[in-house]
Length: 368
Ligand code: SF4
Ligand code: SF4
Image (cartoon, rainbow, N blue to C red):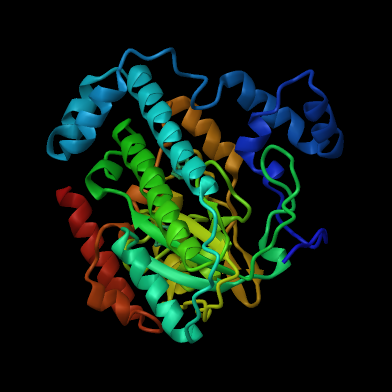
C-alpha cells in the first residue's frame, strides 16, 4: 500500500547516528538544527570528540585477516587483545558494512515471482517462521503494521512512502564470550557479526518471500524503514527493559534484530509479557554498571507501568572514550547470561523465581 500520510511518530533523522552524520556548514545541518536547536550544542560536542569511526586511524588489518579471526572463534578474543584498537575497529567496520551492503544490493536486484502462492494465513506464517529459522534466525515473530510503526523519513532524509501490511521480525544472538569482554574491542566483533548475521538472514528470507510472488523491504543496518525495537516488542519477541533495548527470555538483550516487511498475508503475533518490567525493577544491574549514568533516570509511568529513561548522549560520549561500543549493559544483564530457562519461563508474577535468577547471576558473576 502506498501512503504519504505523515502519521508516523518516528523519524530516522532524529537518531543520534543520523545527527552525527550532519556536516557543519551544509544546508542539511543548518536546516536540522534550526528545527532542533536544543540538540545542537551536545551534538556538536560529540562530533568534535569524534564518532566511533572518526576515532580510528586508517587500518592495517586486512579483511582476509579479519575473516580468519572470525572462523577461529576459540582464539579470537585472545588475538583481538593483541591487535591495536584502531586497526581492528576500522577493518571490522569496513568488512561488516561492505558485506551488509552486498546483501542489500542483492536483495534489491531480485524481483517477486509473477505467480503469487496462496496458503491459509496460519500455515503461511508457520512456514515463514520455519524458513527464517532455517536461514539462521533464533527468534521470529510477526507484526501487523500501522502507519505509525514506520519512520516518516530515512536517515539520509528521503520520506518512507511505501508501507507494507506485515513485518517478519527476527533476532540473532551475539556471542556471549565476546560480549562479556565489554567494554573492550572484542565486543565490537560480536556486534559486527550480529549485524552481518541479521542482514544475511533478512536477505535470504526476503528472497524466499519474493519467490512466493510478494514484494518486500529488507531492514538491516544499511536501510531502515522502521525502528526495530518497538516492532520486535509488537511481534512478541520480548519486552523493552530498563536498559532501553528489547530483552528476550532466551537471550536477554544479547541480540541483533532484523525485519522483512511484506504484503504476504500472515497471522500476527501478540506482544509478550514474561514479567520483565517487574524483574528490571528488582534488578537494576545495568543502571549500576553503566559508566556514563545513561540509565540512571527515574522511570516514567506509561499505562501504569514504568518506562525507564535512556540518555543517548551520555551513552555515546562513553563510546567515544572507550573507542568501542561499550556493551556493559548487555554483559551485565542477568538475562543475557543464559539463566535457567525453566526459571525465566515461570518468573512472571513470581518474585521468588526472580530473586533466584538474580542470586544465581551474582554467583556466576563472581566466578566469571
Ligand atoms: S552501552 Fe555502556 S554507556 Fe551506553 S548505556 Fe550501555 S552501559 Fe551505559
Ligand atoms: S540488567 Fe537487570 S535491570 Fe537492566 S535490563 Fe537487564 S534485567 Fe533489566
